[in-house]
Image 1 (cartoon, rainbow, N blue to C red):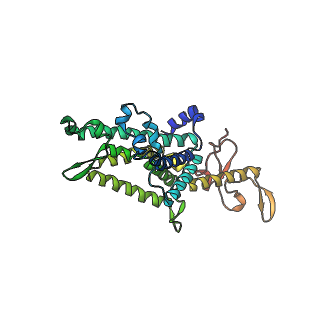
Image 2 (cartoon, one colour):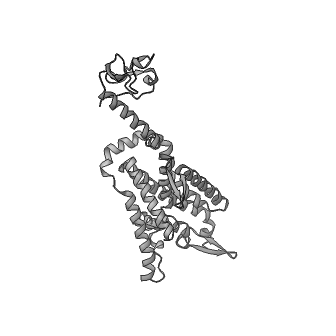
Image 3 (cartoon, one colour):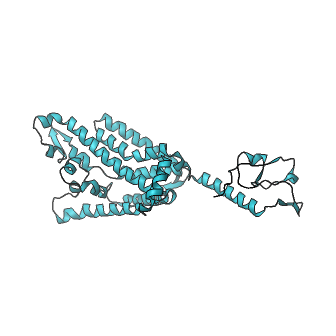
Length: 329
C-alpha cells in the first residue's frame, strides 16, 4: 500500500487540499450555526433531517446528502466541545505536516468514503430486517427510512431514519487521534489539564472502549452502530496494517536517531582526512571511524571500509554493521 500511495502522490499530489484540518473544523462551525439558527427561522424544522446521510433519500434524488452530512457536528456545543475541536485541529495539523497534504487527504477522504459505504450497507440490511412490515404494508418505505421511531407493544423502536440521522464524522475525528497515537506514542498530553499521560495510553483505552461499544451494540440489537464504527475506522485499520512504515517512520525516537546519525556524518565529513586530536595535539591518523570519530590511537580497535557506501567511509567494528549506508543522490 505504501508503494501505491507513493505512485498516486507523484501523479495526483498537486491536487491535494491544504489545511484540511481547518476545513473540517469550519464544517463543524457551519453545522452548529445551522443547527441552532434554522429552528429559530423555520419553526419545527430540523436541519439534521435535511442534510443527514440517508441512502433512501439519496437514491430518490436528494444527492446533496452525500456531502452535507459532513456538516453534522458530533455533539452538542459546550466548553468541552470547543476544547476537543481545538485538540482535533492541533493533532490533525501535526499529522498533515508529518504525512504531507496528499496522504492526509487520502486518510480523511477514505474515512468519509467508507462511512458512506457503511450507510448503504446498513440501508440494505434494514430492508431485510423490516421486510415483514414492508410486505404487510404496515409501514411504507418512505416512513421506514424517514421517521425516527414507532411504538410497538408500548415500547419505542428506533427506525432507520434515526440511524442515519445519528451518522457524523465523530469516528473519523477519532481515527485522526488513533493515527496520532500510533505515530507519536510517547507524546504526553495533560488529561483534564492536570494529569500528564502518554498518548498511546489514551489510544489503547479508546480502542478498548470502541471494541466494548461495538460488542455491546451487537448484543443490544443495535448492529448499525457497530457497522458505523467499523466502517468509519476502516481507514485507520488499512493505513496501520498496510503502511506500517508510515506510522513508524515519524516516531520521535526514530527521528532523533536519524538526526544524530546525520550529525555524525556531517562531523565526519568536516573532519575528513583522518585528522584527530591526541594528547592535546592535532595528529594525522591512519584510521578513523566516520560515526564516532575514534582512531587507532584510542586503543586496540579494528577498522574496515564499507563497500556499500558511496565514497571512502571507514568505520570501527562497533559501527560497521549498524550504520546507515551513505548514498549519493
